[in-house]
Image 1 (tube, rainbow, N blue to C red):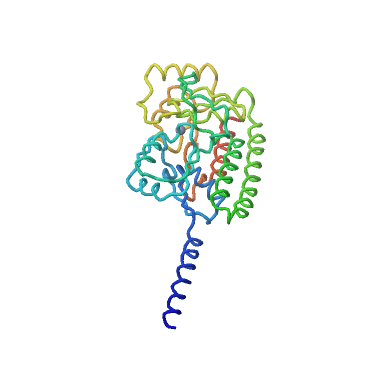
Image 2: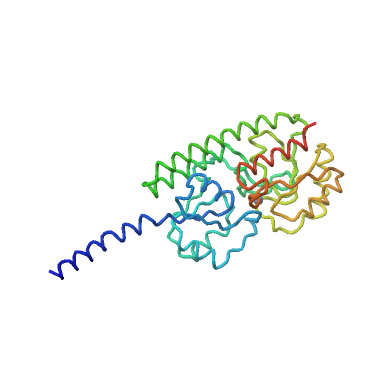
Length: 304
Ligand SMILES: [Zn+2]
């Protein structure tokens, strides 16, 4: 009889313990940068165990993975990335980690005609511009993609993901409309931007600005400083087009853009948050706040 109870107890334990363990185990999600991390947080809340590779104020172009990133990937269930070559270090890192995670490039199937990168306002080569998050309309598509993936991978919580997604999409829709309204205060002649690196192509496309030029191209911010000839060309272009101000960025040292503003004799605007969120407590601690801050800065510098 004793043996019977013992066997029954063991059987019950074998049945329930894995169920309990599985139920409390959250999906392990890795986001490649702080912007993607914020989107996942809005859709998933605390339902997933979320980590980020390239955090706030850090440059995704010059990121150098550490052994810890390798470990994070090896344990992940899903990796959300932007794609279009932004995370140029990911293939190698992913292979080295022997991760079995589902890799999801959020731009894939959402952005059908990516821009090519520009340098100093001219077509540089055939590389694609990955800075799609500056067009909120595209972000709406990417968040839907992200949400579908989470619902498929974690069907037990699908309803919660769906509810969160609908709430976040409404906020993004409102943000997109607000940008169109806010930028309408800038005259057509003043809708011209010069930035440190070529990160605002999609912003210009959606909200009808002209990208006059950038000191660095978008595929790499670690490139050596622009040549004297390139700088002279950009300065000539700034003078010819009557650009009001140039914008520095949160992810980079602004030495080059500072000297550009000085030499072209135009104003150096406050830094925009381009490729990464700001730290907690900064005006760009979330994606929505980051875009609002950028647009307010652009409007205050360029409206006449
Ligand atoms: Zn960039």
